[in-house]
Picture 1: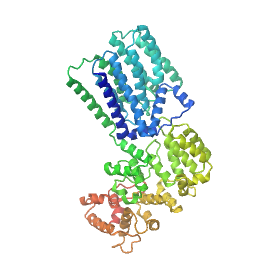
Picture 2: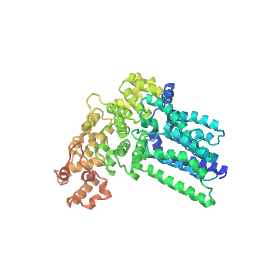
Picture 3: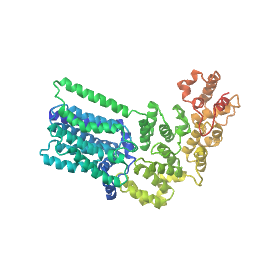
Picture 4: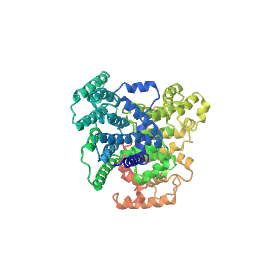
Length: 593
């Protein structure tokens, strides 16, 4: 294959992967960036240099921090893919290959598919790239003594800088190069490799790392209880593809080359689509959009794809609330009970994140602080998070805990993209006038509770009611109070808030609130005369029709049409009782008599 064709192909691959990260799955990069906090300090560098594979991790985290801006981050993360592609192709060429360079794409596609696992760190990509590039000079190296000395130095160095996976790939590539020369046993390869690993792993064992970490890598994957099989597949592809390029006979026709390229591309793309096609990426994308406050985009996505889990629903309901549409449109989408509105805090790094954002915006500062703190302490690789540290610092500033906030801000000042914000925040510490005038901090200070009490998730509706009662400016708290009552199917509690509804919405209460009031009123009345909340003519007509259809039986298929599926009445009929209320279907039947 001519060099200019190979260069154009490499450029095309770079563009394709860049577009993939930037437009298809920017949330995958943002997800990784938000669970690290790269610090520009000697201590942070030394911390990485003291562990096997730490340099690869340091470089990977350095690249990932730029994903704060997706366009820049996508380009920098794509660069190791390109270098890995070039390294494999050139290594195969130095081993004597004269064709089949399209096989160089196979490890790239496998790597991209493997990164569909959100817990795979960019460290692994950097390690594989660095180990292949380190082996490139050896593939064309002459002189037995030079090769022996190179191996004795490079194997432990690669282990320490790139980790055990990198050392294994380096060793296999070099061994393949010697095998191609017919001198694969020259220099006692097993002795060189084992000597390097024993030397390097001895230092690791003194640091009390487990054997799995020492032999397979402790910074390639966030879940360290076991090693994913796909890691070994990618390592094998990176190590063996160069020798495959050199060993396979040259294709005799252009059609054979195109067929080979098509098979590799089709198989790799299918695997990538499968790896990134799971529902977890819907939840990750919803959270990504929440982080960037893309409220309209969240609603559009839900209208197209739906919201299939509590994380996605929490994000969607927040977007509706931010657009003032929560109690008008929430039941247009399939709801899953109150946990799709405000989920309880769970000790993992992700599932409570949208709820924490909701609590922060509502003014429930102490609850939000607990959620954000627990989320950060639950990060799988025990790192700190720029996004979460920033939020914790904000809650401390709002509550006037300035010295505690200063500790978080001092670390953020050592980052690249949070430092400017942190310096401005630190300058505002103690300046009550500046904080009260801040568009976020000042507003939340006005909205937060004026009295201290113990929070109780099972009484969230009452907590939201108190929040609104103390500050009627907090319309979002009223929306969430009403939504919580409806999702818990607690119509009596909703009825207790009718005065707030009239005070806030006047003669045009939200559509779903009217539906709930219409159902409650119909329990003891034959008409809507005297109902204490204005009901639109459309709602009264629709309820009368709905009650007529329901009287024919709850399994009436006409109740499952699009028109009724978007009403609160349909939710009452179809949703399971909320675990926190003990509501039963008998209450629904009583309401629709």
